[in-house]
Structure formats: structure tokens, C-alpha cells
Image 1 (cartoon, rainbow, N blue to C red):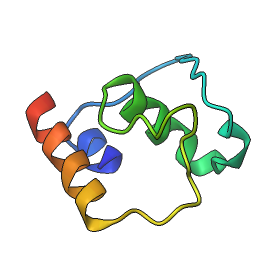
Image 2: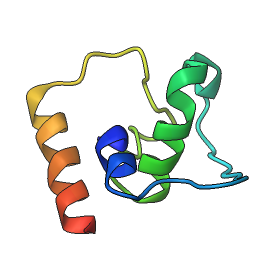
Image 3: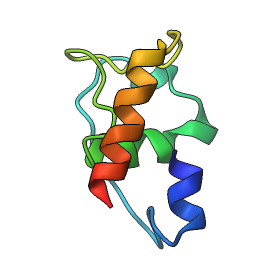
Image 4: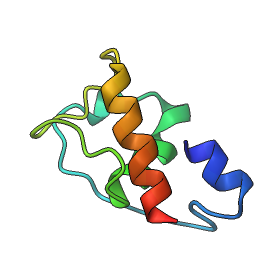
Length: 74
């Protein structure tokens, strides 16, 4: 989702910093952190409770909700 947004001129540009209060941020891979931060900031994916669950499987319903939130954002 984030790569699609970037290819269409969106996403973070330049130097940025976004603080997230999730307890499992250390589990987010370095290559995915920018996308997770952007999706969290824009309400596309906020995790469950105080956790992002980056290593959990994403059920089809969650992916559909993220795509809908992204389309609604534009």
C-alpha cells in the first residue's frame, strides 16, 4: 500500500519523525518501518490495542480494511 502511495507522489519526503506508542516496535523490520509509520499516522493500520503485530498474518478482512482506508484517504 505504501509503495503504491509513493509511486503516486505521496508518502514521507525529506527528513521525518513520527513517534508511535506501540510496545512491539522493535519487531518491525527496518525496511518496513517507514511504511508502518505512514500507515499508522494516516489511520490505515493502527494495530491492535498497544501492539502493531508486525509478524502476525494479515487476514483478508484486515487487508480489505487497509485498502478501503487508503482509498478513502485519497
